[in-house]
Length: 176
Image 1: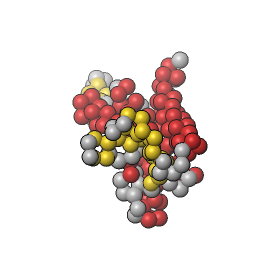
Image 2: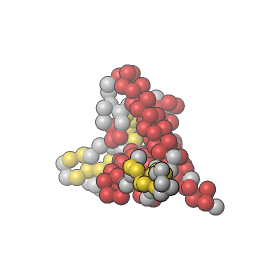
Image 3: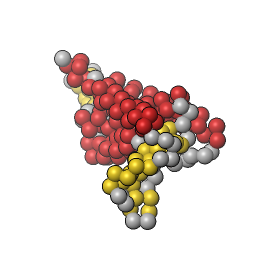
Image 4: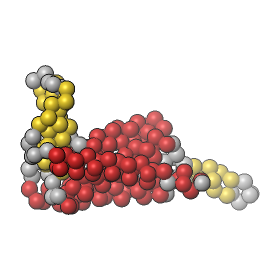
């Protein structure tokens, strides 16, 4: 049971990936590209668009090199987060949950980049005359997970101390 508790982040990541991919599949199945369905008139709609950028469409339109670079950086971030989680470096559930959110969102958009060659976006918000970037579930989890991880790192993370034996048989705590 303790091992299951240690790896609950995998379930969170899988939930993010599945919810992201299912909603993208439904959008591509039931909507035409660039079709917009108002949900709350003048505020929120579903708008099926694609992009080659990162979260919220940033860095779109920079060509093949940027697509490869974005995919490579995504893999690096996901692998780094998995290593941190496997090594047990996060002492608080906020760190674990936020890292799992980033992993799931990163993998969700990476699946699009690899198998569709673009990312499907569909949430569109309008605030008066200002239209916010169109985004998807993976973008939301990457963004919220990153913010929560920063909160964890600034306020909750403490370096683990390691006890080092001294010649007289006592121990001294050392920073790692």
